[in-house]
Image 1: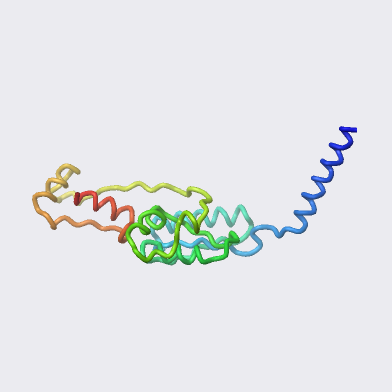
Image 2 (image 1 turned 45 degrees about the horizontal axis):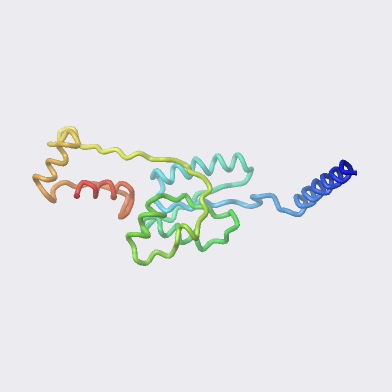
Length: 174
């Protein structure tokens, strides 16, 4: 009796699963968008485009990248947060957008912990410090000494306020 009851329960569960699949639409059944909060050609954009192509191949559905640069990625983040939570709008986030920007800006329209669910870590990007070979500093120690000796004369470039390169550059001003 126990065996037949278990078999019947197993059959019922199997039929329920099949019936559930028949009623559920296959995801994705339309194109998927990955929002990127930075300009085309940057590291985040390139990673998103590689990921989009791999997802397109794996899912059999178009996955496209849409750049919404500006405000340290906040424009894309706010767009993603306001989109339906249906899996068709994804965002290639960064620590700049999800951790630093909320601390830097008073008017930040999202709460990363509340508005987003992490899906996967797509990559890690190292920082590299370079100087012109004919410049007066050839090491980090020499660069720091130069900056201390001539305050306000050493400049650096970054992708914008709150970006990882910006925050790393600011560490030299301490």
